Image (cartoon, rainbow, N blue to C red; front, side):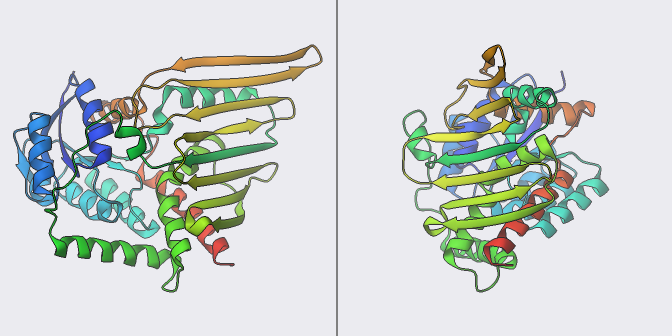
Length: 359
């Protein structure tokens, strides 16, 4: 099997807890040949922990390395566009963590660049590659006419989980202040481009969470049902930490909610309803690996009520995602979460923002 030589840009929690363990699990397909992080202390300690010899002071140096075939862009969201673009100029394939960028225009720009370069770029919506999700999607047509669907992400942030299971390495106060200030300014400019120069803190946080945790569910929703006709309504509260949106699919509606707080739980997933059936899937926290996922299908007939369970599925979604990335690069396999596909996520985000602004 062809081994892809990969370099990682960004070595934060997602790299340490999810991607590096998944890459080690797939050593027959991947070899980590380069690392970059803006924190020298994180870069040195992660290189030592994972036995990676080559470290780079800049993302540009990493993507130019001749022994890097593909790049995992795991940097802060505001840098995704720049890092993916640099990798494409260098002729590399890319797996970029969601979101692909922070604006629709930037995602569209990257899609055009990827097409021109003839390189694979996959957006890291790992839920869409999870075996349990694929099993649920395959059963959807058997349900009959859909009457409603609920999607949700109720969660506390990752440290509550990974501090009990993983020793995450954080910067030792060595990120240059000028770089941090420039990064914050770039993020603010990108978000205000969508939300407006006068956007409230709640709206800005709402957009941050839409492009963050909510993007998994919005992308999965499109995979299951296609694009909605419109966003019928949206409301943000709790300073931006809670959002609810109603999406119009013509014959049925979909509601989506996220809630981010400090309760120790992760409740993400969806329920799809017909008149007599319900299909449900819950996603566990990604910060604990190989937790089981089960698809539940409830059916009611005159004879009674029946529940069918598919699974449990223990395969890690990040492993499944990387397997699909490898297949796409080495064998022309399908990319479920392409840049072109992701443009539609941003159309929905923009419409939700418009509803939140009262348009």
